Image (cartoon, rainbow, N blue to C red; front, side):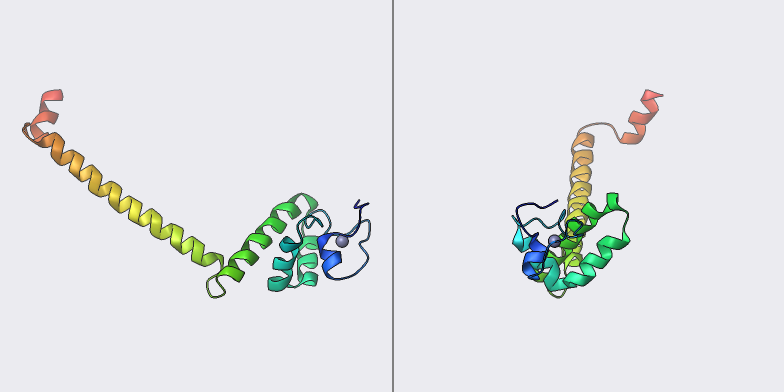
Length: 125
Ligand SMILES: [Zn+2]
């Protein structure tokens, strides 16, 4: 499959890249850092084993997930991608809080100088 040479995984491991190399489709030689990251965190043989145990149509997504998680773990050795998830949860909470405040302000502005909401509701019926 890889006529021009070894995939990033085989190059990194200094081995021959077989035509049916499990790493080759997901770790091209054009992006050596991609394999270096997953190898550093999971180890090459574990990555190969994980990919082999999956149905072929799931391997690309799994390789991408391993790359992302490895990159997060390298950047934040303590929390890894959980750190990113926590940050996003915090942002959602902050935004929900801001939205609730804004809605309360809008409700207050709408009720200013007008009849109480109870009376308005009665008129509509
Ligand atoms: Zn290979």
